Length: 445
Image 1: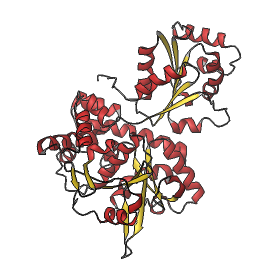
Image 2 (image 1 turned 90 degrees about the horizontal axis):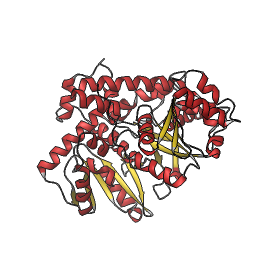
Image 3 (image 1 turned 90 degrees about the vertical axis):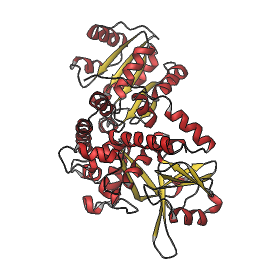
């Protein structure tokens, strides 16, 4: 199978780090497993330096990790690395990649001395779960610039398929509030559904490009989910984190206003639950939407830690998780999902997609619920903060003519509202003050 190196937006941020910091910090690339951290680190070093050393701590023998036990003599360490790995390092023109650094905590602790020496640049990668678990008892360096890497976003996915034009055209259409027309809209929705099914994990995208077979893609995604399951047991050996993750599709499809933890893991103390949720969120394997009791600028001020919704970091993984009752998801199911003919309410899949798109665009996830006059719960799916005002978002996969919750919310908090959006599966359209936006334009909000 061909191993491709995909174009990623993080690369530009890495270039900024190299130019702005000039070796005064190490670059730490954070993110979930299999999002492409190691690949982009090596590609960057290959392109931007005259030479580089790659140390994958999951593969090297014990002699290399042992070098970092004592960093009082850096000359000795650099000489040994060059001998062991047969690479010549050039001061200020070479990089050292510390890949899967969670496997060698002493190497991360040594960053302060390595950066202070200023001979070379340093790029660290590692999964957040493992990094957190393996850094107890060591000094975490402050000399790190940290970037978060997410699964491939929709534009990066289109790049991988050879499409450089769709997203720039969508940006122009959105800025002018122009609709696309039926034919173009149908094509882009089909392209978007393909992204929802394949997802943004580079391995899954690579499998799709090689095979065009969605069942093979599904098998690749199941391997990734197995890795995540192993990591969840590192967070919580009792299996509660793993259970919370597996129940995400069921919780979202139940259409309730919060994640109900008790049916999944029983009655767990608030402190224990918060600790598990914090590590799950830090792992970037999930995106958590936090409930805001008072929807106003400064969302974290009224964040209710006991009410939340949870999404899978990648909608492709979400789809596989949703059909985990079968050993392999049948290609016919994928084809029906792709053609939008599967007889199921897929609103929760679109909600997971919107959560993923908003997160990848740099937004933290917040939502709000309130009681209407009949004491029924109304929910605003997502809230954005823009220019001292708030922008409520409702997500619809069907029945878009009814948006009672959004209307009541905007009436109740009219003085706080900047823009109001309904994300749905139709073309761009205005309805009074409401902007009805096709879901593929979510990153442009």
